[in-house]
Image (cartoon, rainbow, N blue to C red):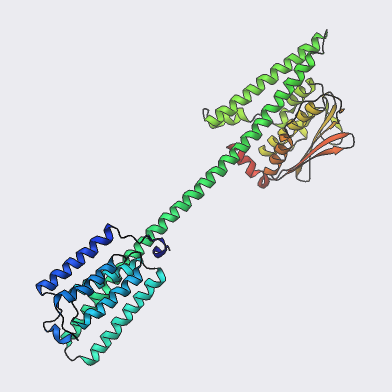
Length: 424
């Protein structure tokens, strides 16, 4: 719960809501004194220790009303000053005018003081009411007087405190709800930012994996055309590969843009944005071969053609594993065309022990040979794709070759998160 005593305004300059009650209480009390309507009992002078005139009685009343000016900023000191003025007023005959001021100070102290002080004040009021009632019960023989005094104490002491406590609890509940709403809004904003950040990272990874391979192949193939003088069949093959990579890049880019804009039906988006599967690996290999790579495919211990690859894959290969494996092979071959053009490469895919093993090796490039610059995002993207489905990727030099080895679990539990990501 919120402590309103801590949150209250600590400025000591009285405002309109302080001045008006003080002036009103002093004016009303003065009127009661002048009109002679101030005593509780007809023989009020018999209860007074001293008899004073009306002007002298205005002094404690004025001091008590001055305490009303700071009752919100200094609730407990203001109440103490009011009780002192009330004690002085009792000595000259307790009046209704002072009762009104003390009731206001009790209300303000319960409402504006700290929670601890407010609770102590409530306990003190209850204890005082019980003690006085008990004393009256044993000392006063007239039951009408006892009932009148009890009702008077309840009116003077208990009602202002009970009313202020009710208002305070309602204010604390409102403040707590406001703070809870602000916290929920802050949490929602943090969740939104996290989701946006994750979506941007996914989009960046997909754009890199989908587009970078095609554009790298185009760059390498375009450079190779210049060295193929007089070899029309080879030139035509490279130009056809360049055109195909360009069309594929544009198609996949358009599908991703439409997916983000939500222009297509969900099924159409998924079919356009995610055509990559290991069963279509031959298209990827043909594009890489057009750049000059000498690629062999292995589906087990022996090297085979990519035509037998589909037959060696598990029948229930999860879509998330299928897509991740394809993208890892794509990125590995893209890196090979960038950093080791014209080298020999080997792609191996096989299932073993509940995991799908994907391995791409290529000869290390001659350091004197010019290669395309890399951003370093490819290896990170491969590791992220594998990690999403619970797999791992290692990439390191092995002898005279560069080796990329991915282990992707085939269990549906490990692939569930990636399938959901792919579905979105």
